[in-house]
Length: 610
Image (cartoon, rainbow, N blue to C red; front, side):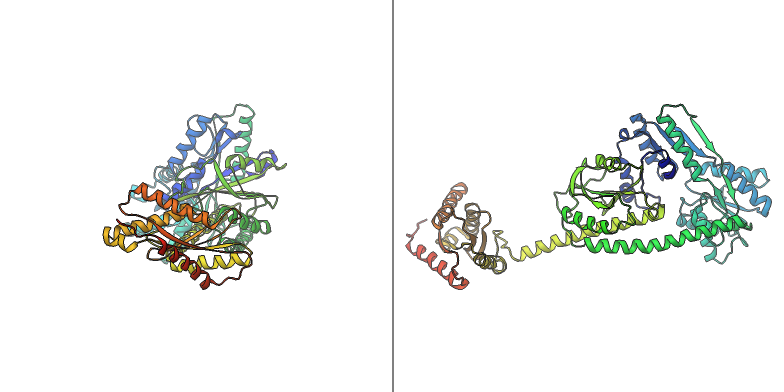
């Protein structure tokens, strides 16, 4: 479809998710979230690839959203009220394939493995299976219709149950898609059966994996290239105002290969060789993806904020964007780095209007990290290019949170379901690990902080003095600043404890700590040195004086005592030493001087009667 979009000179935006029946509901919900991103009204037309949706809820949501927008739309392979559709004939290809198994290969006992029981495509393929068998005199029991949820694991599980219940192996197993057929082949080989010698197996869709398997898988070719061309052609006609047929159906045809017992001709062999070449390239690409993300994680493992992740991602992708293409955008929720914080407002559904555009690459060159309207940013990237582009948008999520989304430009390596899935999973795991690292770093800081903090007052403790306050004073002197040391002690603390109890004593200590916090500059460091004694370190600005700072502390202490209506007299003695610029610094001697001054004032104070 991308090739035809380029010829039509239009930008194509594909909003892709990887929801699945075997995934937890929480993960499916995060995957579905990408469908809430586009404002339909911003687009000229909409293609609903409804046959690729796994859940009815996805179809219903987009059906309503498109109808409300009034934007021209076409549904692919799925009839929706009020929307024109184009699709392939799910009936004729399956009917012809089942007829071939019976008439050409003599199959009499047939088993049908469908996707989801009430899925529209599945119902049509199942009906064709039953009609082809019935028209040739073969009656199929209801018990011979089982369902594998479109997956290898689901098909193997259902087949396991059916074989155990029936006690027999059928002549042929007809699957409603190639993925389940490949799972069936794997199950049969594991249990000692050969395909096609013991059992004939067929699929549907002609995916590449089935065409390089051993044996090569018989399937139904839906010719996606022709379908894509016609789909885009019809949508362009609608956008230009032309009337089109409400329903357009293209035929599909069986592709007979080895798994039904047919020999392959030269054309098929050439296709096989070409597919093997592409698959070998894909294998190499898988190794590239692994190496690519190991380097990305190495760059991101220590980031702690949006600026850091933006710098690390942009620098790396500028040097290597072989997977992402040269036009890339990664948007994260503004609260992404509030990993363990109660202030985080990470959304379960939808995207905030303003997001962190942490990575924006255009023609291989990074843009400045910014916050902006993510929906407008999507179009801005496309509008800057003179050439039409194909853009893939995928959801980013982990630990039950919506992180944001990524937009990648058309790229040979990434433009396949499997490779895009692997890229997305790697990026999600990388971002989840980043958030885990942030949590660990935050917890480490908290633990370190707790080890240096006094539990009663929240100020630093004795260890905090050694780790924070003392080094601060040394650094202040070394860079030519004026440091100040204060020793502060509550007057008559013993009398407060003896007369009013230790609860009142604790209150007095907390009030003094608050007086120091609110009375001194914010950048001063305060520590509870022991008991009711506090140690203060700070850098003196030109307008400050020692006496003014002391008076502010005492004034705040008086105010707090009045506000809390303490029943005792709350006073303190304060000794302060200012270290002038260039003065030699001896920590022990400085502390002793401040301590001596504090005791000098304490002796001068009169006895306080309570």
